[in-house]
Length: 226
Image (cartoon, rainbow, N blue to C red; front, side, top):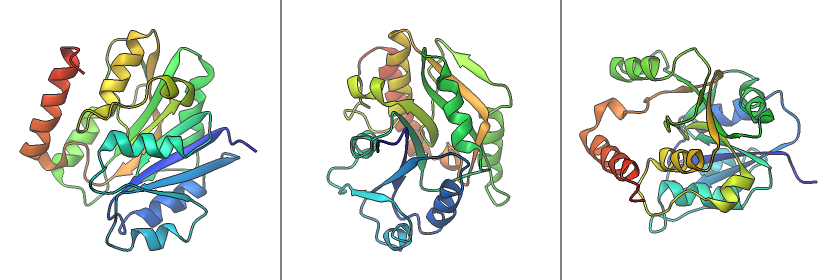
């Protein structure tokens, strides 16, 4: 039987979070989905913990790894017509997380849906501020705004098959992909009722190194040079 839904989870030394992540995933009120974990040579207990759950595990080496390639490998190993993408340190906030992402695809013009990210009580004030201000409470349909975030998202496999994530860039593959599918006439939906807890936020406590990498890729995207 081919599942209608796949959940793709990227991991790298996520022993602190992956058990809570998978508990929440397998507690979803959604029938008939598979889980594919793409692990980047974890050296902690991540693989041991994942082994307690009915997951397919794909390994990607440090030499091969980038964020896009890890996602592409995971989706290649999956069967679902829709692919939910979740970071191994993100925890779905409730049992409706998967269902609420999937509901956006009733509209065939929708290529992808991404959800809200909320901080945890011990997240840093900087990360809390950034998550609260980035991920609001209003649902929106994005026609030109290509902000999109793969820590908590879902895409159509049929579109991905013709347009996989670019493996030529280091990060920000989500926004590059979103811009390209919008140029093909599709839309991106932000669905705030599908929420996950994300401890470190999306700006990593204002890491200058990460900021420089992200800005470099976004400037290339804006210039259509990817």
